[in-house]
Amino acid sequence: MIKNNKFEKAINCQEQNIPPIWFMRQAGRYHNHYQNLRKSYTFEDLCKNPELAMLTAMGPVEEFDFDVAILFSDILFPLESLGLDLKYIPGPTFNEKIQPKHIKNLKSNLEIAKDLQFQSDALRLTRKELSQDKSLVGFVGGPWTLLSFGAGIKNEPFVSSVDKNKFFEKALYDVLIPILKESIKSQLNSGAEIVYVFDTNAVQLEKNYFTDKYLPKLKKELFIPFKKRVAYFTKHGAVNQIDDINNQLSLAGHVYNSPIDLTKRLANTRTGFIQGNFAPESLRKEHSDFLSDYSLFKKQMLSMTKKERAGWICSLNHGILPKTPERNVKYFIEDIRSSFGSL
Image (tube, rainbow, N blue to C red):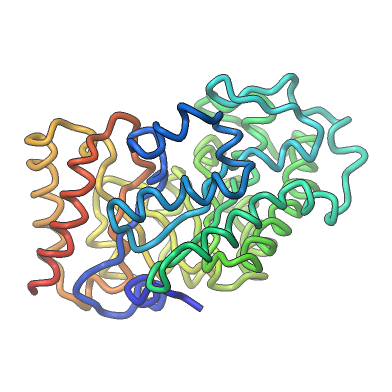
């Protein structure tokens, strides 16, 4: 059951004046609430202690009145179940790269679920704390994104010939996808209304491999089994060329990764939601410069009819950046609601 009415209408691609609003990384380093928690706790503490994860997730919802709360966690924790030693100092580091030995003797699904139980517990606590008019979503990392981090190639701009790398393909399709499938299932059973697959690094994949093999595998193993309960985000431009993508991939929706052409994409959407697409870089600017960029964005979205805007989740085209002024976040949310509510 979708708790937030605006979020529910967006998922169902129904017309409404005021769109739901939430940001990826809305509970993060820009926010004073998060900074205060970090004075006493490590990042891992905030993720792995369900009570602290709940407090972290609740902070921006309570202060800025976002329509949706998101599980506070990290995409990389499933790699620990493969035996990789993950540390944050402060960014994620591994003691070694993923190797055949890490996928030779896999834990059972039950053991992996136990490893990630802190995420399920955090979702339950967050749902209990949230008001009944707020929605709650979860997330996992995309399989390629997890592999690129684990293999130490996350900073490579391009990775070729993945189809000829038997180890990579086995890790992707026989190991990581089943783990992520179980994680999605557990999160949905723990109160998440939608689970996002954050697959930023899939942009590294060759277009033909991405569209002809990788994406069909995701559809078959992660999207169809949870039809209309999973959303997708990647920086790979190929997704923007798929017509009626939500219907084609059995998605609840997707995050639009381009800074342009959202209006055209949105007007042609008939099922599910499109989330986006104000630039995080613009939100981080000094207030006067932010207002200049924001006014152009708002004007563009106001030029659409209510029918054309159906399915829109007002958001960023990626996560909110550190040092983003809280003043800008507050203004963005309040002015969107005021401007679209007066139509």
